[in-house]
Length: 344
Image (cartoon, rainbow, N blue to C red; front, side):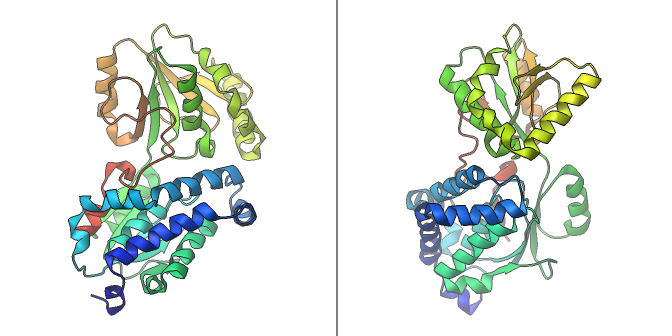
């Protein structure tokens, strides 16, 4: 075990992350705007609102109570660990999306070898540097690299295509390799106006770029889909983001040329489809007549789904408006990253 790591007791590791959460919560408007400008220059999708949402979620995740409730699930954290190099290839679709993996690696006592996404270097470096500022001993356990070397386990997040590449290159190591996932909602016709408003945040937060964003809704056979049109009006501002607007214009043109039927509220296209993954600016919908049959169908597709949002009876369901507020134990793809790391 590394000598330096012995000085980072579990309590000190916890204290560092709690302090990080408090720092994020206390950031001034000027600090947030400055960070946002840098991040947006690197990735135009990272608006100030998106950054605030992401950092607020991280700060909530790192509250002392959250960590205190999280730790008992992993008694191995109290044991000495033989630190190993953990290569982490991070995604960059939403601000700071790679942080949870970094958190797990460092809290478990291993060495983080982070290959950052070119779409999210500003936010991730900001967070990792702040960890070292709070607890300087972590400097030996955080490496930001262009090319991973001497890793003893790997965590990769990407698409179905990149997953094949990752399997080829890293399959010989203990690994977690994540593929494309998305989220869906099941409506039963009894939803309130409040439910629809909250569903809007599940769909539009981060412009729909995250795997926890709802890209499809299932509706009863005789459901009036136009009900959704007006309830999403508070999110009409998304069309002011030029990249989102470009997607909207492109997809609308394609549907018109193909004479595909769709609904349009000037910032979102609703289209009937059996597919799960809708393009940016499009929400798919599909009708169902048998709740049990739909449940069985989605259970079969569990490896393609991150979240199922509904008020109906569905295992591991998520309430409306909660997809973008994951807790520490809401692991991507349902694979317990901490358990994986502690078993190495």
